[in-house]
Length: 421
Ligand SMILES: *Cc1c(COP(=O)(O)O)cnc(C)c1O
Image (cartoon, rainbow, N blue to C red):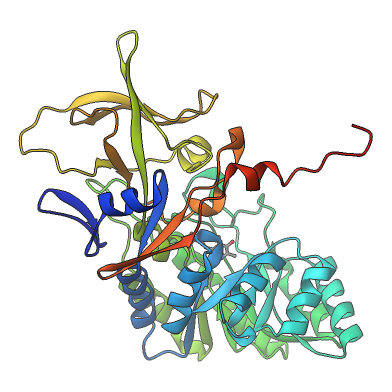
């Protein structure tokens, strides 16, 4: 459920008409619903009630500081995957002891930043990285809390570009090698082992791969404890999928996910961390765009929008499906017709949907891409010198621009011309 509904024939974000935001900020833009963000966070938090836990929002999904602050004030921690994300989380007021640092290639500089500012734990992805964290910690005279990310070799049955838990993926260490790697960690004086980390992929629509991975983590916990390691925290990653096509998908609910976690790991008495990104932000955001032209082609009609692949790259990158709905509710029974829905960028890949049935639309009409809150704004670029589009946050009947659209001057003046030209 989200808070983007038609009221009196007009699409609203909570109590604010989308058309009113469009008038204020221009198109295209992203808009997020506070109520939906909080609802999704609480679904996870409640699903783990009764267990010592922390929901660490995977902020790479949508990292605007207003979103981070909204979630942090509700009690969320953050999962960061770069030094930049770490600093952004801190800037949004998230304390270091609520930030976990994931990612396969943390640099010494990023590690230093996190150790200086405070960190809940590093999720270590390789032995060379472990050595660097140890060296930086010793140099600073501190002890770095770590988990090791294990790769359980399970098939997440998701899009190949977002599966991370198979042995051929670059992530984590093979679970069979964990005893050696933990022994290595224990020998390094700058490190303190606190637990185990696993994350098998994104947009999972079935609990079974999670169950398989978590069962392996349960076994490993007992094995490592028997070898004298103090395993008291399990970071279970993110990855629970969302329905993109409202009609026919029903991924497991957070409450079912939480029950499965308790079932597979509850007996170990560990503190549980989870790192959901997409399920918190995905259906909490829309991208709103305007029809520029309706163009008749050879046997097909094109809706040419002012939004493009640089603003929302998921269809081009993952063949992703997004529901696209008119901002003015179509009259009941109105005849739909197929359109190819495209942006103005000079790439055939700049196609959002092919032969999608839509009510008749005209230049100037607004459309909204549903489920665009996660991996939308954060993956945008300025390709074709198109400004990054603004982000807006709605809360009840209020809305605020949380990132402005840059001016062309700001974009162009970022270049510097060498002396010799
Ligand atoms: C991307 C990522 C997540 C979040 O995945 P979602 O599918 O958005 O829930 C969590 N943990 C790690 C380590 C990630 O890389």
